[in-house]
Picture 1 (cartoon, rainbow, N blue to C red):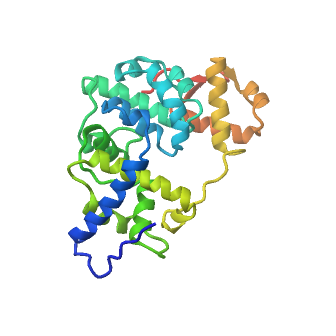
Picture 2 (cartoon, rainbow, N blue to C red):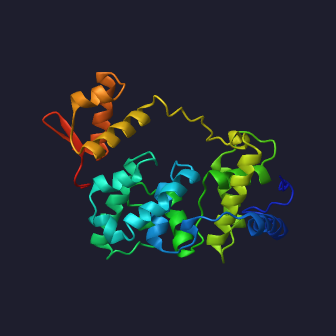
Length: 288
């Protein structure tokens, strides 16, 4: 791990040119010899990049790798995704977790086909109006799909800047990192630059597993087993397989008390994943 001491040489709004060059050389040198290869990097198709960005939210890359190609084969373009039943999309999504993202992706596809002639908008302001697309995701879509020099941060990028610019510092806030991202971005090749940054950060996290504990945003993730997330996943799996399942059958199939299951079912309905009628539950037909 290499540190860059910015305490004496930093300018008001960034780093001096020599520091920027040194930093970029280090990142690009690593990327040249150790850069990762993923199917969503082998394309500049905005639709396929949109799918990958939604999949990668809160999900390990290894899990997305197992699902991405299969998902694209089933839904090769945004028109196919928009016209497909939610149950089919959830079935393909199974294993990625946070199924509300699948609903969001379906809603995004519906609206893009309806309002933008099937073309992914290259406007951050428009992207921000879609479900599950926040500041970071909107900017990453612009960088990877359209090669636009936007500014965003995610865990791997965060790891890089903490390790280089904040040695020995704890509770590093993103507000201190963002100006450094702005000062060092390769404006001519933002897609390549962010790929390189993320790969360098992924390597750092393997070498120094405790590195991100120095971020002010660090929070230990609760275990999946026995959690509401696991029960939600089981309910959705049963609903996809059975097409239609009763409340009684759900209680028999899932180790969960009545009150907890009821709360989870209400949440799934609120998220637009299931609908109920006469004590039976099924995957919601429409995402409207």
